[in-house]
Image (cartoon, rainbow, N blue to C red):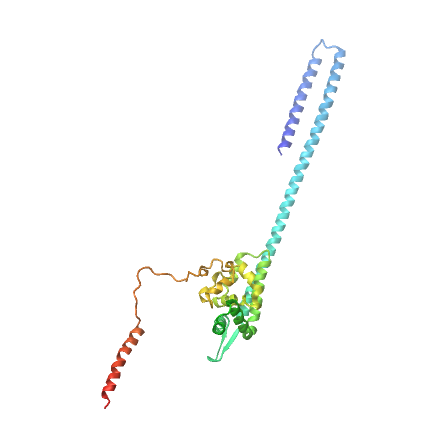
Length: 311
């Protein structure tokens, strides 16, 4: 410390100066013949009178140096304790983060197993669908129910038609999807409530969901059965990759807060997701159109010939 070094230098200078001063005084008194005996006594009184306060000052300076050294040692000890505490806290945080990561990826693996165990039997094709392929069929069936509601209740509110359609769908497929939706809800909740949860965990979960899964989750959250999941979906932008063009109705986007779609470019209703080609457009007929037009031209001639042959 600067204070400690300054005190040490000051003491050294004082001791050296006092030593030189008293040596000079003694030398003067002892080596001059005209010095009287009573003057030697005065010299002793002078040395005693000046040395006592100087020694007291030196003792006080020594105390100051001791205090400075103790402060330095305490500061070093405090710094070392703080480094130890920081290292321990970092170790605990790393351990908790590792524990969270392990749990999270185990949950993702469990979600994969749940999806793989879903199966649907198709009576018409006499085959069984499994895994993610089932979600295409699920969404097709939900679409049919919603279209039927639209036809029966054209003046009804969209939120009511959607909720009613999913409830009817849920009644038929709860056995296959109940575990899936419950587990997915708990994964998102686990990320949200854990201090070690990060945005990239939601991105990893989102990347694992197919388009059909996202569409079903979209309508599940609009029904009474999945309403608890909706706040987490909006908070963590779960629909950032949702193909909004495949929604049952584009107006359904308004049933969610815009935060739910994150940076989804298709969230803008004007954006169709299709790249436009520059330059004028030239109508082109395909081969089927040409065949149909040829057939339509030949039919009247055949009709006339048939009429001409009649007697």
